[in-house]
Structures are given as structure tokens and as C-alpha cells.
Length: 425
Image (cartoon, rainbow, N blue to C red; front, top):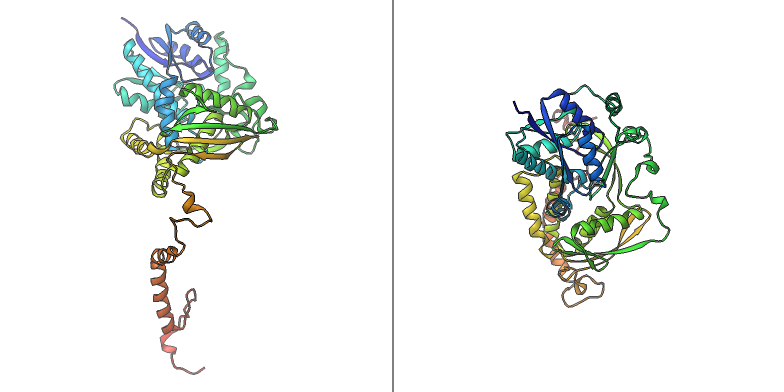
């Protein structure tokens, strides 16, 4: 009888290196390892060989960096979507695409199940499972962390050592990391105590600590067309190269570091440190451009949409009608978000150094302290009276009431016993 095939989301890290022998020991199966390249810093040739040496029958590398940027990162950027005011959704935007790719390979290989290394405490199990379910509700999902006896990264290392399988990391650097073109996340070790300062010297991969950034500020210009960044410092760049360029520049100046205790989907709080240098520059620039290109009502409502989209993306609900509908709204708002933003980078900070757009709604004739032809100061009186009409009507009512009671607004009426009325003290 032919053994069933299981497609494994393989990164070459500790978890998935353990999962290959574990699956072979616990299932009558052959394992097809699938590496999804969303821009992580990885030696795919070495990782492929590691998968084969560890027991996989084959290993594929799917390069989807361009698809990741154009169909996942840009929609989040155009929305200004983030989670809990800090997290720019680096892992959250990549997982749905990885799930989609896993299903594609499972269909090609005739697999009956897809396995992944997400833990039973984390968000990624939700994102992977929901993504797989959206495209292949018939496939079994195997998440070893939810069933095996291993309970820590130390036990995983011991598991590999017992089987004489090389451990793909140093014990003293056992952070749980996820990296892609957009960011790097770090969890574990000293970060499990929120009262402890992160060990940036040994932790950071893409960014320098702000205090070690250059003493001289750097300026960068980013141009957008309909909400999508298209050039850096006047040089047209495709999405992947544009993000890589800004990652290098932002990382050198210590921008984009976030230390966040966040609310996970599964109900617990967890702490992570995120490096998103290029993404932080793009979010800042995009919002600066929207400030001059969007009218007040559109901008205000779009802020609410951004909050909801951040929650949906973080919670693994990318492939849902609501996320898709909200993204259509966002696209409609971006038709005039075209222009150039100049930013100043200095020791971890980003500040605006100018913004321009052919669709700018900023009109100097109206906004300037020098009175222009389009604005009459006298018009403000009528506007304010109509705008404040509810305030005026309420004040007139309270004034009429106070004339009968002798009370002014804010006074507290004295409660008296009706039976005591008219009696002498």
C-alpha cells in the first residue's frame, strides 16, 4: 500500500527540523517539504539539503516575493493597517499567502494533509489553519505542537541531539524568530519577562540600536502612485527592491523597532520585538501623503477601516468577504494618493521634511494667515452659529429653567422634604 503524502511548511528552523523525524515516527507517510520564499534571509540550497537529510522525500522552494508585496503588503500599507497601534503585520500578511502556496503544492503532489510548525499558543496556527481551510477544506491539518509531548525549545533541541540530527541554531540564540521581506520578529528568552530590557546587541538582525546609529541625519524621498510606493530618491523601483532599499537605509538609522506586549488571538498576552525599518518608513510616508490628499470625512472613516483591517489580518481572516470588501473601499480612497514625501531619519526617529502632490487639498489661499479671495473671515460667524445651534438651544432651555429655580448650570438642587415646607425652624 502506497504511503500517504504530507506537505510540510518547512523553514529549516528548529521547529520544522524536529517535525520531519517526528512525522515519520508517528505517521505512515512520506514528507514533501515546501519552503515559501517571502523574502526571508535564507540559504535555500542549504535548507533544502537539510530537509532531505532529515528525512523529507523532496523539498521545493516557491519564490513568491513579488506576489507577497503586490497582493498582501501593499493592501495593508494602503489601508495603514496595523495592530494595537504598533505592529505592522509582518508575519500576519505573509501567513495567508504561505497557506495558499501549501495548498497548491498539496494538490500537485496528491497529499492528504498539510503540516505546519506553529505552536498551540501562537497566532500562526490560526492563520495557517484558516488559510488552508479557505482553499482546501478537505485536507487534514497536522500541527504537532498541539499533540506531541515536547513542551519547550530546549526539549526540541534534546530531541534532535538524541537522534544525532544537527541542531539548526545555537542554544544561546534560541529566540523564536520569523523573518520575511517586510520584517523580523523576536520572541522568547529574556522577552518572556516584560520587565526586562531587550538584549538588542545579540537580538537585532536588520536594524542597529538607535544609540549606535549615525550622528548625521539622513533624508529620503518616497514617491507614490495611487497609494503604492514607486520610487526612492527619484529612482523608480519595483516593490521587492524598493522595500529592500528602505530596509537597508532604515536599518542603518535604527528606525522601525517595536517592543510590544500584544493580545494574541488565543486570548493570552505575549511580548515580541519587531524590526520593520522599510515598512515603518513607508507607513509614515503614506500617512503624510494622505493628510494632504484625502478629505476630512474620508480620512476619518478610513482610520476606522484601518483598525478593523488590522484586527482581521492579525486574526488570520485574510480570505474573508469582509477583508476583501474593506480592501475595495481602501482602493477607492487611493485614487488621488499620489505624490512625494521627504522624510528625515535620525537615531531611530522618523519625521516629515515635506510633502507634495498634484492632488493636494491644501490651498494656500484658504489656509494662509494672509487673507485670500477664497475665504472671508466674516463667513465664520454664521457657520459657527449654525454649527453650535444645539449648544445654543440647550443653553437657552437651561437658562429658562434656572430663572424658575434660581439654579445655574452645574448647580446641584437641594432635595427637600415636602412635609417640612413652610414650617418654622
